[in-house]
Length: 385
Image (cartoon, rainbow, N blue to C red; front, side, top):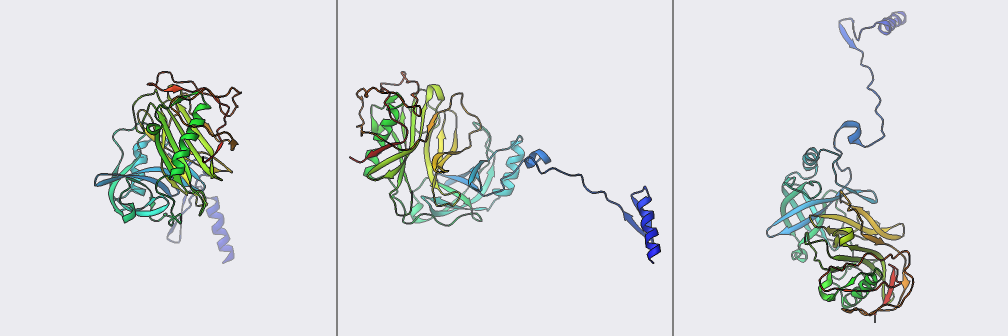
């Protein structure tokens, strides 16, 4: 038997044919598949658009009796990754909808770090027109908790990926008097340091003051947007300016930890607002999800703590303007407390720090007063009066 088996192996090994007959049975020799390198993204190796592999964070808007759900980013470990097709948006959109937005799919809603209800998909598709690139959008119905019924927007995740509720006790739902007093003072310092326009009316310039948690049981931080010659929304023109900053509580005041200033004539319109805070990597520190308005559309960004400093950690914008808005993330620097005013007096002369390079002054704004540059860095520390 051993000799016969050896002879059989020799015959099979020497034959040049792929099909071998023996004892009434057909044996087929199948060569191994060619080696495929693991380097490079899936779409480059297979020609198939890559779908998100991790949980997806969504933005839900309530409009009348309906609601729309829009993808913001894929949560990839500690990072946020844009939802983008490599080339074929139609194929990507169809596959994304089939995988993530099927009819009847359920999503958990969040507001201020707490669960706020459920979104159920009724239909989904690609928008007919988009400022940058078409992103799949789903429409559906909401089931809200009583506490969340008055909110016009939420963050959301698929129910299978949804983390538990977040922050206890809940932070204030509106900025307190301390935040309302300090936010314009910090904004004036930031604007002065850039030699830009001070608002004639600080109340009108205050587009948003949004509190968010910093640590359990601690005082909330604030994120604020101030606008000159503009309002929060898509469109208008490129003749205004925006100031956005994040400030954390420090003693009796606040330290600014992140500043984003945009002079529209040189950088294009870029007006951020906070959608909500969210701990996307579940490390106990909340980051901020922003919607940023331009002249023809809007996009999403995220700012949060990374490697001990606050910074921009994500953008879904698919193209950047010729001149980017100025962003700073310097450490706190003590400075005297100014008083917001419609027409500020000249600041004391002094050298402008390298971290705070003044941008071009917009002289075309309607009745706004220019303020001279002051030697103030982006991380200012101010105490409550």
